[in-house]
View 1 (cartoon, rainbow, N blue to C red):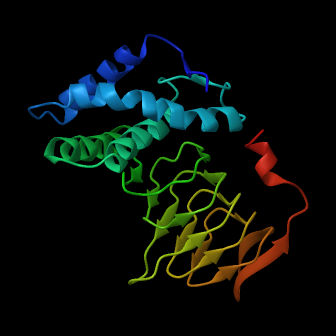
View 2 (cartoon, rainbow, N blue to C red):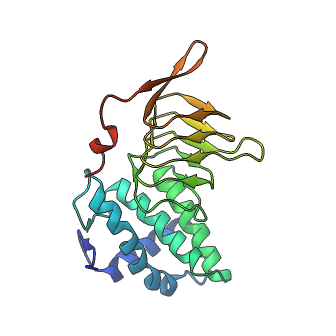
Length: 219
């Protein structure tokens, strides 16, 4: 597998860039610099399918000054650390990376969440994501909430698009290819495959899709 190209600098310099931000906002000792250097390459390999798939990005080129790419990378880096096992230093670094994403991007995406191989944060600011099941090629706009309702958590299918200010919560099941319109709340409900979801006077309204919405976001 070819390496991801960086817009500027080296992999080591990218790790230093992240550490400087962490040291400025959430300083601790030890600061985790050596651990970060070890796991940045793994996070870059995991962002490669996203760069290749998303129309908004140049294929195989990571730009840490692109806020959507950087927020994705910070989550992947924290998750990469977590899946490789935690000691106290790793745990502290994961927590600091999570807080960094909240500080810089306003994104509440915990490092234990199992995100799909390909997902696209279309800004994503103000979004809060529960630890639940997410299908591949997920699109998340800003101010999206995916949350628990009591002990219940939703399941989100493949190729789902969540437009701004939408909410999916409880034991909802979102079918493959569903598009949740802006401001729509889906709580403890099932959404069929390949439909548009709107808010109606008597509840949710499901309409068949007349075009391939996900092709606007993915190659």
